[in-house]
Amino acid sequence: MLNLGTTFPNFSFDSTEGKHDFYEYLGDSWGILFSHPADYTPVCTTEIARLAQLRKEFDARNVKVMCISVDSVDDHLGWREDVKKYSGCEVPFPLIADVTGEISTKIGMLEEGGDKMQTVRAVFVIGPDKKVKAIISYPTSCGRNFDEVLRLIDSLQLTAANPSIVTPVDWKKGGDVIVKPGAEVEGAQVIDLPSGRPYLKFLKGECLNKK
Image (cartoon, rainbow, N blue to C red; front, side, top):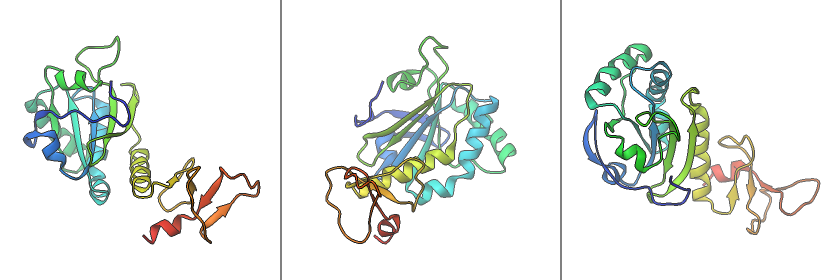
């Protein structure tokens, strides 16, 4: 299993967009690698469709999307047509083939005690430095919430650009943020809570938006 902060392993892959080297494909972009249990399954179809509909949102954040399962490229190509019929959108990102399960095993996408050729609904967020920034795993029975994934990316990118802050519960882009304990941030943009506790110091989100 990979841990936060570790380097995401490089690998070569075959996909609906051809053969690529993972690192070269990412370049200087952020990346998200989604796994899905299998092609031609209902929950996965709704997920790939939603990802296709959100293409502009990921593009605006400089995030390259990739999906992987243990199905073949031919299966992916056929299933992609089903997704298009369901969503009305072309699938604008590569569906990676991992027929042997080698890649999925390497990065911890197989469920312990489950089908050895069926991946869980894993989400890996990878930074431009190729480090793992976030990991989310869902059981195969539960579809993912991509609004939350976008919120997570917004937080990761904001805090990467502003190391002195962290984001509070239910934070959304543009909202107020928390000054990281030990960081020195002063001025009118600082919001002190009535309790006066030094570890609970907020910063107006609008100040960060002006950068």
